[in-house]
Length: 102
Image (cartoon, rainbow, N blue to C red; front, side, top):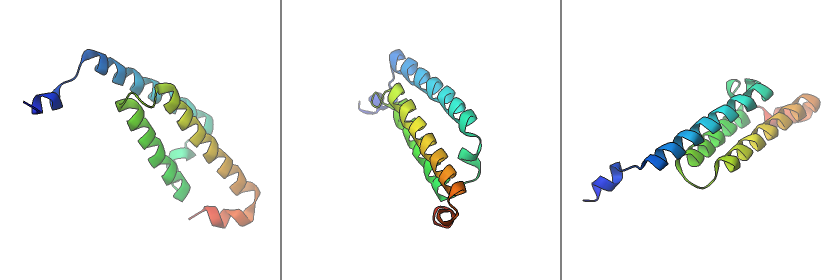
């Protein structure tokens, strides 16, 4: 029966999902501590876009073989760096603040 495959999971898959989830969770904590809670709390338009992008990266990294855990961590790190850069630009160049903010 086909529906039996839908419920099937092997212990290697459980281990891989668990390790990926743990690694990404720890990475997310480190990145959030480095960049601050602003990454998820202010929710300007680009903060919201980043939150959605991080969720997508986490889901695809945890539940599939590709991207790998390290690729997922690099992608999340790059998003945090982009957000930090945008925040810095927003503070330094006031004319761009109105373009970036809601």
